[in-house]
Length: 113
Image 1: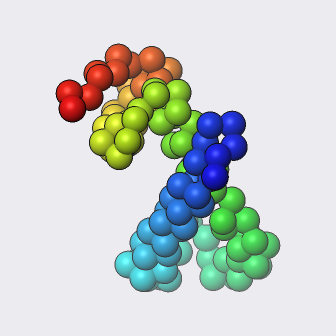
Image 2 (image 1 turned 90 degrees about the vertical axis):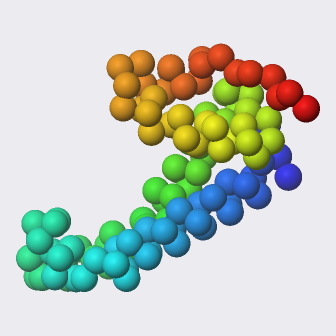
């Protein structure tokens, strides 16, 4: 299933995986006390805003998955190996001076086989 050249099923699966990784990190690996220290919020502040922010929890993984799909499409990465190379290059390019533009315009090698 495609929309404007993007694989919708891959975007949905990627968003679910990103959401599960966030759950493992923030729900299981980090204790509530440690999260309070890292966020700088008191327990009262968290309780007051938690329910309002909870509804927007799935938005970020969906936007991240769409962004990754767009970068893979712009690079014309073919297959799983092309997507893996793009995924490996993304952190490096996003921290560099050229940003995402450097990633999207990087030369692509044709597959040997």
